[in-house]
Image (cartoon, rainbow, N blue to C red; front, top):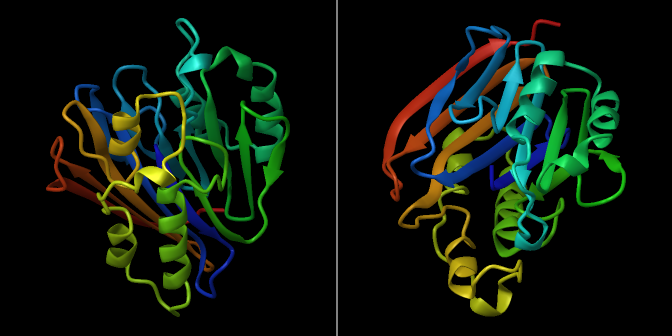
Length: 256
């Protein structure tokens, strides 16, 4: 994932309203979101290169998602795949604080990452680019390729739009997907400086990225109601386009 925006315990109907774009090289193979044969309680996409995932939820209401932290100066040689940090949490279904303390012991082996992990009663955020972790309070949060709520243009824009949607008693899922499809680059004076060329910085500045070899591969909306219903939809796109290639939709009730 390269953009996550979510509301946690901040709406009368939904404990979680979660929207995310996965940005990746088009040639990297991936499987659409589904319940995994080897882990039937996990609903997630699968990275077919390394075997992990970027986002998922379980039948028991545990969820996790990850974004990369963008800083070319801290890249490691042959690091382990960050997607297994998400997958292992979904397999183990531990309390988030316990899991984060475990991965903190080995976090410096990985390239930079941000991890959101928890369940409908407790949600946590951790990055290996800062000390400590956060147990999240009710509110609206945004995460791209820097730390939580770093005010990059795409983060500010999608957080503001989600906050406006939360004023409605019910939320139209299509409205949530719409906040993920903006593809207009940010003004140059608002671009962050993450150590990549300015023309690339501009190309990756909108919520939805369209480049020749890299861009937004899928958008996902996850809703968890206060009554425990999970609504999950993933939309996968043709390379370099906003044309939807396929959709995967799931509904189920949390089992615990």
